[in-house]
Image: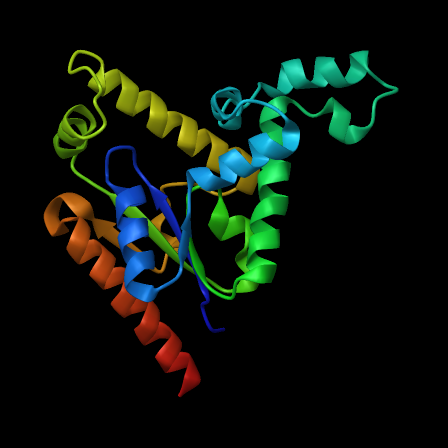
Length: 207
């Protein structure tokens, strides 16, 4: 099946968002990342900052069961915790984009799962722990005393969000067509490799 959409999952501090944008520019297509969150916030009438904190905050199954049993008259979607509502709304928006645009880059947000039937070229960006922490401090402006904790928490939230919503394992590299170490390759080369692999795969499918 021809791959039309590039999805990128990435460790915090690996530069996945930057790499996704570079790859999109080289291909002349759009790159979506935080834009999805902003579009969701606009539709919900809720501040993006509030949704961002809920986006990857998955509740425990026990507390969720109590919530459901306590509210039997509410609809299924009403009963969903905010994190699940955000995921459903983002999924709708992502699918709407896929209907309008033949090809684009999507960073995070379980894109490989949501758009699985659309034809995705799935990429995973990872990096050396110390290099990621260095980027978080120098490029993201994270305080050096908080960088390690921030990075670990962000990775845990992303992993939990992905695992719970997809039933898959975020770090299982078998589900990706391409895995890149940005610490060794650099952002620019990673973007170039994504473009080359994406085009080569599709050229092979057309043979």
